[in-house]
Amino acid sequence: MTFIEAPSPNFDARKAPPDGIVLHYTGMPTGPEAVDRLRDPEAKVSAHYVVEEDGRIFRLVPEERRAWHAGRGSWKGDTDLNSSSVGIEIVNPGHEFGYRPFPDAQVEAVVTLVTDIRSRWTIEDGKIIAHSDLAPDRKDDPGELFPWKRLAQAGHGLWLEPPAAPGAPLGEGEEGAGVFALQAGFTRLGYDIPPSGKFDAHTTAVVRAFQRHWVQTRFDGVADGVTRARLIALLRLGG
Image (cartoon, rainbow, N blue to C red; front, side, top):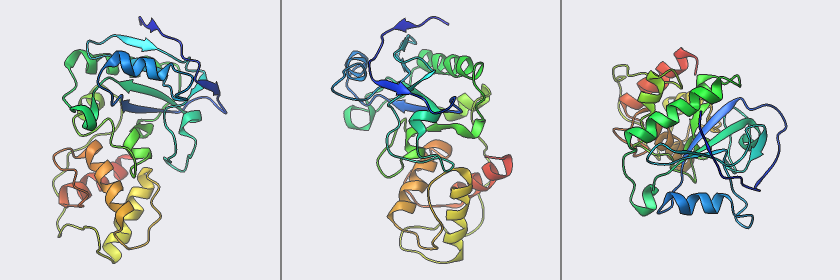
């Protein structure tokens, strides 16, 4: 692959080889602004790669080093995703500055980059995640417009579209065995959500993050039949 070298000083040592990939959007007005910030020592943030809308890929931090992209969060019990993952920032203004679809050239570059990364490290499909998956209470990226289905069709990540499950939707404020089972399912998939049987604000955030990744036709935090069916199918797939 061909990279544009743009070294960032913002990294430190990994604790172990990476076994995951986290996808982000830059959430800034332009790509150059994002690259500048990820290279600014005062910002104390970075990523391994930045993928521009035209498909150019900037390499900021060597994969062998720990970039500072994930922040506070958890996936499958891992609370230091900076140490265990490769971070890819995808140029997009994000929800704050005019969220828009990701161009074909950019998506193809992301697919090629993920393929390249997985040729060097052992990374399960269930550990190719969104920033919002590991931090659902504070992050929305890369958001509901990122084509996770297309990435999965290329062999990376999980995607299924089973028929909707029966039953009434579950939403914030509800309690009971159905909520407990929903939370337990999200825990098994990887989210940090200890089952309580109470559909609280954190549960809403987790459902919304799940929908942005695996449903995308709705992301309101209400666990309807489509949302529950996809969760069950992903767990059966081995997510």
